[in-house]
Image (tube, rainbow, N blue to C red; front, top):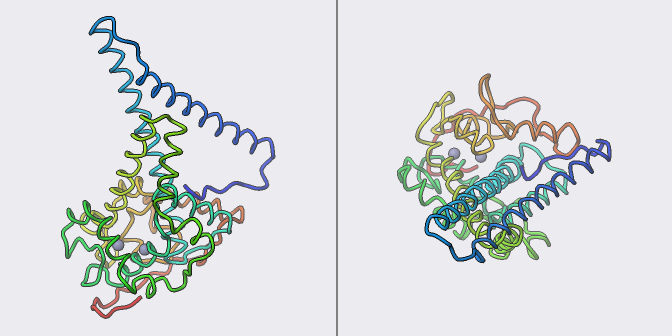
Length: 313
Ligand SMILES: [Zn+2]
Ligand SMILES: [Zn+2]
């Protein structure tokens, strides 16, 4: 599941400066709002009457809820875009390569927002492609039921990632480097840093609430691709995954999952008119400014493979 939003190095310096100032301004405003809300909750003066206290408390609660939902969902989207662009399309399927600073930025975003170790995610996902909806698939709704995959996908993921041999077999091209050893292999440190940053910027109440919204929505949206995206929706290509445009809007294009199983090496998940892959404009822009290199210029459809338990990637 954004993290690699490209920046045009040829853009006039004043535009980049204005953009940076604007981003800093937004962070400062959000920080002040979050801190003010937290401060008001903690130090609110005793109510003069039950009616005014009820109104003030209600306003504070509403403000906390709106800020937490907005920041939490935006963070989940950032993590989702890093997942689809970097983990899924670039690393797992080699549909494109990212310039080193962009790839490092995506790794960092994933570390502080999800704690995911890239080679584990890649290994579990490649195994899903190798055994799609047959024995051996780590998270098949056909074998386990879509509700179980929707609710317990993260547990299924952890179980498979910890299997001896899964990473060694399916991600042998991704050897840990110095950054993995120092930072990215320490999942709880990354997650703790992310939550602490939220609390520092937004204050304790909004920060913790936004972190909760982020984690729940990130996990549920990515679970939905594996559960709903193999159960409900259209199947224009001969595979068990489905296309759902509404899910694609929420998951950076991953909801066009039937297209993806048909053409896993395609950098875009949009294969026909009327479909929208929201991550594609970012990838396209990145390719135009030299931050992304797309491997194939044409979509290469994969013929349906015989589904046997001995299938390998
Ligand atoms: Zn799938
Ligand atoms: Zn894939």
